Image (cartoon, rainbow over all chains, first blue to last red):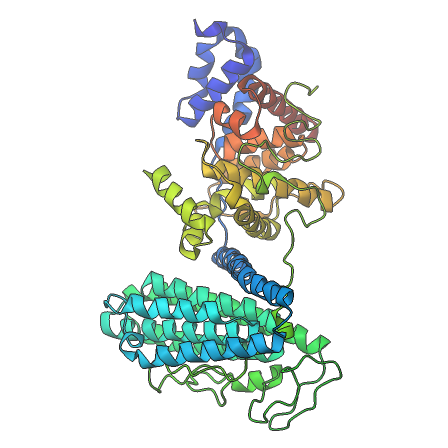
Length: 379
Length: 181
């Protein structure tokens, strides 16, 4: 007989029955001895079951996703950097290779790799679906792994992002679709570049700003002409690019706020005292770095080619025209990346998010296993 | 089927695969949002906390093991910790009323429906005066729709304790609403 169940159990069953569209009256009939106590609580429970389901706004949804992907890119980048860190450790132990030489070697390696990537142009022009496309992506991964400094990493990942953009452009024109994998790869490469640029400094950040601006111009243009099937992917790519652009601009603004003034275009600067080599030092005058203001001037809707080599490769040029990077970046920039917020970094005690599942609920005051207020202890 | 697919996604997400992370995020973001939103009562705060929940999940994903408890339940646990931390940072538990999105609707303006929505809003505002454990049980039962057995697994308590918590939570709510009215 169901009526022999204790009150808590009966209440629980009735709540489940209400959720399954049973009526309150039918539940009460099943537990006549509990009717007096059950009725008001079940009425309350029924009110709570009324579905008023708010949803996240589309903007917040995208922002959260971008934040997640940015963090993932950061973590990947940190994993990737453990290798150069070990290399640096070995070189320190040996005491034979100054860091400058390490950087020079890295530059040569990357240049060679990029050069060979250029000569294997049969694969570099390939598109997803082509048998040569995996070769292209593998060669990119190889080059990425050889980029040891944040400056190089920025350049390399921006170049790959630009490739993905061109591939999207080509496939939208040819097949009328924007492949999800390409859209994600574009986001991913841009995020990699941003993470590296944030470590590299203003020049790389300015480059990231220009590239993401360019991405938006190209994607907006594509979106205007794209068939319906391609629009969701393009809209997503555009939104992600806008987020990346905002992040790059904000980081550049901060970097400009705390750093020495930028070298005016076309004018070499001796660099500030103690500045790491390669950053504001005796740099060739043609390597001008746009400030935020200069970047703003570049924001011309529909602009295709950036005015200098800090911008993305010209879309009217040959495909995959990435040249070897012109500087390896200062060896001092191979240091550890900015430390991201540690888990639990909001000031509270660590929660269980970083512990094995089922290690117990978060150990917060008044809640969780072992917390002050457990089910059996409450008044 | 969904569980199997999700297992694959989680496996890929552990190596920070962007596609897998995106898929997991899109599957669960709304559910986590609802859970957080009803606890904090502020849309913007809830949206921000959802972002935080998924970043924390990513950071702890390498330690995640599929023990049969839904992945979403693991996210709820992280969400619960974020909500508690949010209130701790606020120093005092403010009982901000749920914002208008809960009561506004594009449906026809029927007075009965409006009254019903108002009741819902009152009840959920009162939920935030319960203890953390009671709030968690109510959220997991009524927002996430878990059974008492599932809630017990998520909270690491016995099923009987969950039923007792649920009873006390509803009784407290009733008293709170009586006082209010």
